[in-house]
Image (cartoon, rainbow, N blue to C red; front, side, top):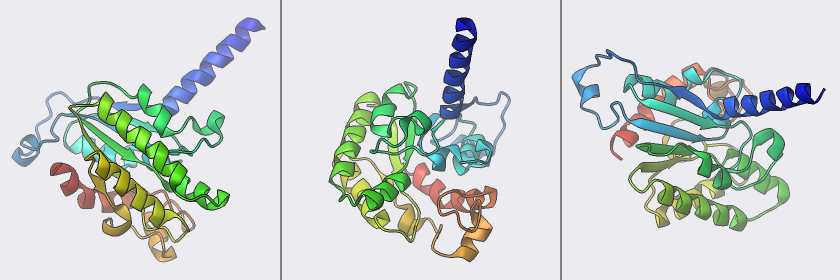
Length: 236
């Protein structure tokens, strides 16, 4: 019985790890157009770190804009998304894992690019608990400082939540820009510039994983967003 329990525990651990990391290795013999070969992204090592925006909820990771970006530029791609995860809040940690300000220490070393996507769940919890942004700001500061120390030579950037018609989302985006600015970390403000507008059900029906989903893009939504964020990443 002890042996069975040990095996079961190991399987749970492996399953949690599998949910936390997805890897794509560069293809051999890849022959892209000249503009791709000359890109700063070409054959670089990238880690995308975050919540279900990154893990893509119930859909394949291969549908995400960041996987498609890695495929286009033949990158080594590490997906370190975790459904339900937060930047700052500890929320059902057995299910969703520790927050990103703690979890970043387990990210792979020696990468060229780090893209952090989060804040959706933090905004929801700030609204639920009636919190102001002080706690969120303090933990985000720990994360930014830690990432800069862990990756002194990597390009680090953040992508904010979309334009979501719920309380605390604009405040969350403002704090992300504020704290990242103190550390010289570029931020893509997806609330203002992404063209992904979760406010309208008709838009969600076309580009999200369901008409009531305000977080998770479908395959078509990822295709819509990729050319909007790609110039930002190319110019980092």
